[in-house]
Amino acid sequence: MALLLAADIGGTKSALAIFDLLQRPNDSPVRQKRYRNREFHDFNAILTHFLTASRPPEYGCFGVAAVIRQGTAKLTNLDWVLNEQELENRFGFHSITLINDLTAVCSSLPLLLENDLLTIQQGQPEEHGVRAVIAPGTGLGEGFLVEQGSCFFPQGSEGGHCDFAPLNQEQVELLAYLRKNSAAVSYELLCSGKGIPNIFDFFASTELTRDETRFKQIAEAEDRTVDIVAGALAESPCPLCEKTMSVFLEILGSEAGNLALKNYATGGLFIGGGILPRIAGRISFTPFLQAFRQKEKMQGLMASIPVHLILRQDAALLGAAKYGHQLFSVE
Image (cartoon, rainbow, N blue to C red; front, side):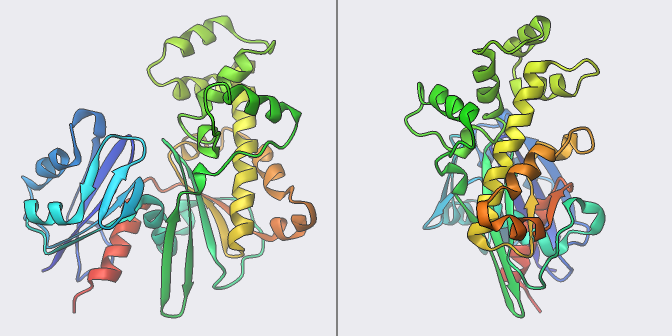
């Protein structure tokens, strides 16, 4: 039995699972565990802890929230560095490959079932059409999947770091506000866990009505995004939080539309990441869809592109397993 260790290594958490390469990647793993990164000084410490209770796998495929260059990954939102050769030597793997975390999410798309998705726009999907993924989490991930015949090509990108383009005067003022502290304002600075507080702070600086008790609670919170989302969804919602989430969805929808256009994603646009699945069914996606479709002469095309929210929490881990099976398959 040849074993594959799949991992999803993000800015906040890491999930690891061991799979039998003779089985399908969507079969139950031999062992699986999730870790909070802040409780470990580096990924080696997590891997050491995980492997103490397991037979060392021969192969590894790790999805990492990082730019991967020459077998080395330096995480974008965490001060960790991973290297394929060093990991192989230290832990005795035959071979390890590091892939971008969005490459992993894109790899998972063929394995997702109907109940793994929430359809936001039905659209008219084209068979073998390119599928695109946008994933607001700790940061903002983007990628695509080309699958036709024997071709299986998932690819993550760093599109979330592209320059933010305002849609209206309100967003022009938001951009000017953020430029006071950032020479370059990317979509990630708005459409992510660290971006939502930036939108909140902008509206807090205006005359928008706010709940002072809620405002104080958010100001003192360890993770302000969690409290801002809770404020927007409360029985008596905080107007400032509601406005923040509406604009977050509007900007995310616009960038999702940009991604779908640039990839000609007639196979569908998929929303990943950890933020939106937690509030699915409790918030309106109308601001997202309106901005997604508002693309001048391409409005008809945008209305035809299916839009799905990925509900499965371990999609990136599943995708890393799928990628590893493709790369290290054994007879």
